[in-house]
Image 1 (cartoon, helix red, strand yellow):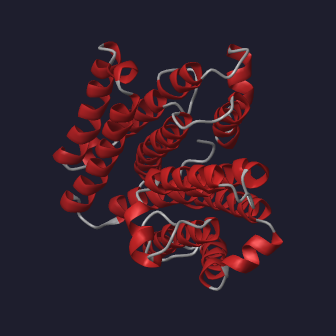
Image 2: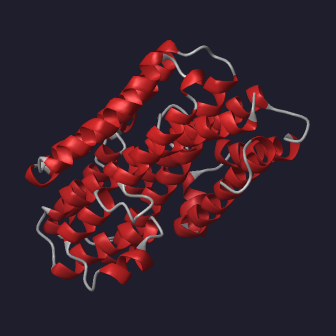
Length: 318
């Protein structure tokens, strides 16, 4: 397959997944901001969201304070922000348009309709009227795009590069979400014993689990009250949890194996080693050595994998 075609398919999927994950992060922040909390804690939550997306500097250049409405507008509609939902959906559609011949009609029409529809919705003020409903719509369109790809495309290299982009992006975003949310609570609420704090904790962790569609999964797996260490275990180490780091790396390794070439052995080795580290890790060890340090290192390794995939298969310097 032409590297340029592979590049467009890979980035089409990465941007679609990124739009969905941005919607998930905004949704969990929006939901937790409705809970009773001090202005300082609320500000820290929005600041954390920008920081984990590496957008704090760009945001500060345009705004002088952290107002929820301004942060959400920046993350949803601002086309000068390369990770806003609008920017991601536009980039996904442009990449799809460049390789229409490699996509089924249904796959192309799903991408194109999403782009046309999000423009219509934002012009009509749907986002301001009901942010939560808008975030659900973004997630639904991403699910639809993945489902159509899975249900209509031939399982050849085009399909594998598309899947590779999806799961590498998902691993990156889940790690960022877990990191920022645990980091935010680390000093504020860990170890507190008052009923009010425990109640806040419950709603906070519930919101995080719901943001990665894992609330019901948690209940099924653990049948217990929500505990931070179990949330970490579920989202990092459970191979049967679809949005976990372990499940995402499983898919990355499998799809890399399907598209391997004569120069990709080192990339495969590093992906395999990262997967093995997740397979044999234990959550108590991760928490003992420091979750933030663990996730920071994980993100560095995922970013390096992305760079290596670009060098081995795609158009360099995307």
